[in-house]
Image (cartoon, rainbow, N blue to C red):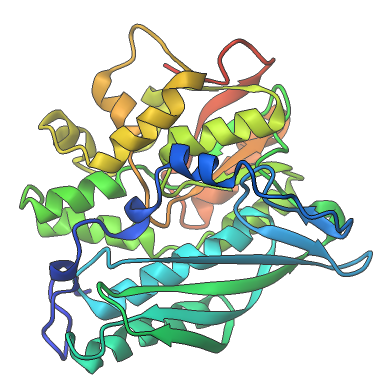
Length: 353
């Protein structure tokens, strides 16, 4: 696996950006302000719209089928074009999985400076996206390009789900246990790489995690009748958990000592390698979050680290969580863990301890 230089063209995509991946999202507080006055559509066939800031929209076609519709794109998160395409496609498709859906087709979204970067890099990005889509059983059937700098890539994805089995970030029930399927820390690892604070194996591990599809997690959520979930991306674990809590009318309690972390993430945070996106996410969550007095500062900031192509956070009935976790471990999600619980609504929407 190449994570440093773009193969045949020898061009480093990280030289084009200051903030890549899901760290490039508009800060969550500003996004909420932007959307608060947007009119909500009245179409009764819309099962999930913008009201709860979910991972994707869901539109009912008939009693058996609903469409899951999403889009995602971002600037380069790694140096190599092919790897960037793989990660961006994985991240885009994940929103369909987070809703319990099956992805079917996609459109490329590409912003690329045609005169400033070799066209071979462009081809490698698209090849990576195509290969990951094919792995997911998704057909790329078109797309759109504009000339822009720095480059950005992603997909608009359409999938399907049964209208009665849609999984949303507002479906968490009191008593549910919370399972996280991937370790945290991609934002910190990527920042550490750019600051030359990591070794190659640590970056390669993070890249491997970002390329891992959440397909099996979606299948297991349907098998075990999960109704509340989200994928962890640019707003960090804390930001996305807060949205789940508010949408579901519960308090989410997370034990940070139980949260799986990528190798060296805690050490990097302890050395001050905490990206700016984490502080922007903290600015969003602190008004609705209680941080216990014994919460380690580094773990607090890791909870707010912006993830690119992160895992699923699923709310599972306690009597089913052990078996679901066992199947996750057996299917390539060896670091998946129970990290918390949904409790009766308290003063704080989110508790980090």
